Length: 347
Image (cartoon, rainbow, N blue to C red; front, top):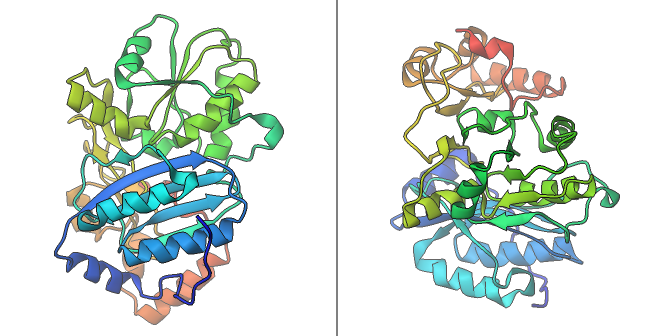
């Protein structure tokens, strides 16, 4: 489809509170889905602008990354516009016959705005083109085949997600890297698997996109029997439910939207980072200058006002002007606020 220029505003101009209020006032239902494809996009910025204009008119929300190497999308689509959305995708050669992963738990609150960004890569991995060949990837396994291969004696199951994702849910017996980013995880996994190049390796992630790169990366480094869970944990859950298969995944699947997780099994395998009680609910610290992602139970949420430390609880009581000054100061410190820090485990 040709890319058109437009005078339509191609970015959101409303604040978070207004967007959430508008979402809560909607009278219709939404579907949450994700999809990706490695495909050459010659003009990522023009492609991005055309998508934004079309999806804005359909009232789609989501977080989408566009790069020369392809598309990575997590979206929320109004059910009454679902068929129009599908028809639009089919008009784009890049999206023809693309596979969707539909959320199994969806209250319509996964996203509250449309964000489409142009990136160097659709998943940041730090690799060069000489480190992998995306046309040479591992064997894609459906849920039934995955379960069968997991039971094979020499099989090695590897979680290709960040450690805060696997903490609340993972396949039993899988290797759980301690990395905070996919970029750090690739060399860690390569080191862990050294000497096992001839054993069956089973890779899994949220929706499949990280395993696509990892399987190609491992094959480049001499691994002979590389397999990946097709559609990731999201589609595994769907297949398990529809085909009444054994569910080998325990706990929640972390998702990168407002829900922060959806239950794949009833097991709670993690603990509140403050009191230690069994819990698998992620929150962001309500101190905006911190915004730390951590696990917190309802009792601790009530006691600390959804903050990660006594310091942050004091800060949220300050006048907004003083809080804004703190945010600006901490922004200059280049502090990574997304991951767990020692101060977050104490009230």
